[in-house]
Image (cartoon, rainbow, N blue to C red; front, side):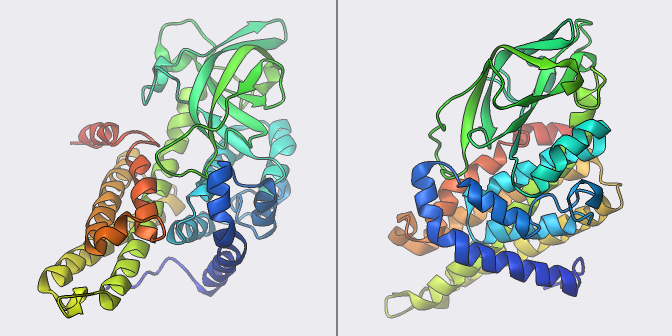
Amino acid sequence: MIPRVLFDHEHEEFRNTVRRFLAEECTPLHEQWEEDRVVPRAIWRRAGELGMLNATTPEAYGGLGLDRRLTMIAVEEVARAGLSGLVGFNVHDICAGYFINFATEAQKQQWLPKMAGGEVISAVAMTEPNTGSDLQAVKTRAVLDGDEYVINGAKTFISNGTNCDVVIVVAKTGNSGKGAADISLILVEADRVGLTKSKPLRKVGQHAQDTTMLFFEDCRVPKENVLGGVPGQGFYQLMKELAWERLSIGILSMAASQAVLEQTIDYTRGRTVFGKPIIDFQNSRFKLADLKAEIAIGQTYVDRCMELCLEHTLSPEAAAAAKLWCTELYSRVVDQCLQLHGGNGYMLEYPVARHYLDSRINRIYGGANDIMRELVARSL
């Protein structure tokens, strides 16, 4: 297959560091984290020490000041290891992007250094109980009262919701009726009076990735907590960062697909049926060959999108296409690989079963795939 050219020796050294950390300090404990429905904060701090959090944060704010290839490696290795509880690292990185690109100097100084070190965990609160991918229709409202905004509303499916120390909240601050012009992003400290977190939500998969509802009841924050200091910029800020979020989901999906394929090839070599290994049946080999070809194609597209991202020329349509195609492929790979495992594929001791539970959400979060189709269709 076509070799990847995105990474140099230093990138691969970082990959080895991440891989060791995940194997030695995360994989043995992940099942307990799934029981607890949360990843311990100590793991976040350790990841910060290793440079896994916010590699793109400038050195002046405690980061490494590097490009997104290190973030890509971290996403890939977490996905390959099947550690869905650590998907929150990716959310944290996305939040850092909002701070780096749009925050005031004071906001950057306050939050970015601690985020880079894993001392502060961040979340972004977009989705509401009755509002999904239509962000202009949010009901959460922030009303200016003197020098403070008073926030009321509810958010759901908030990744890092249990652990988070700061939340980037999508709220309406205007009354123009023009939709996008009324949206702002507001920084809310998790210990603010009026902000309440639910217990971790019980999900089909990704059990260790803490996900909660957030409730705002007359929650007061200084008006200076508007991201960037100017209200009405939230929708623009969201649209600028969503392309990376969607590409990162594509990156995760491709790495996880490759891992599942490799695990299934190993399984079919060792498992015998009618006196010979499963892989010796032509039907099995052809299915695996099809999946290998599709994964190679998807990886090539994702890597090209990453090159465009590094050049700051990645279009929303290209990112949407990556998210759409790669997540659909991930589900197909898992389904076919589970079938090749037979009954063992339905047992959680086999990685493919965990992927079966964890993969489905990728076609929903970051914008449901039918919304991705609509975004791609706009470019027709």
